[in-house]
Amino acid sequence: MTTTVSTTQEVQRDSATLKRLFGWLFGIGAFLIFSEIAYMPLKAVFLTVGTDAGRGAVDDLAETILAALPALALLGAVWQARRVFSGFAGGEILSAEAGKALTRLGDWLVASTVLSIFFGPAGGRADIVFGQSLSTTIMLGCVGLAIRLIGRVVEMAAAIKSDHDQIV
Image (cartoon, rainbow, N blue to C red; front, side, top):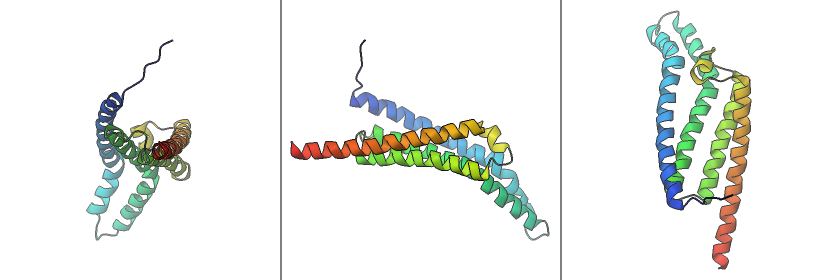
């Protein structure tokens, strides 16, 4: 059995690729949230400003925003993943900052799970856009907890490395 050890340059190169990928995923996700979830309620608000139907349109928009909170938290997780890989691409692989960034990524995934349990999908549209179901949501929450734990481990390892460097 052979093991391969990645060099720092390989990790940085792969992380730069993943940073670009997550940047594209964030852009596509933001576009889908706007076009598939928020566009029609926003349009209704703008078309009914100053009329009696305006209050109902605002209520529909507020309901849509509440129901879209899980998808918005997932979008936050994608952005945070982009930031994690941006740090890795810049050479911050075993650092306290990398650990904190990983912890925040896990927090976004857990927040999405909690929000999904309390507010649910945006009228079924978020399910269609992101392909989420209850089992997927729970799995994302578990992955978020695991990533959060890994982030804490990286923070501890960075602190131990820093102590070791000071001793040596």
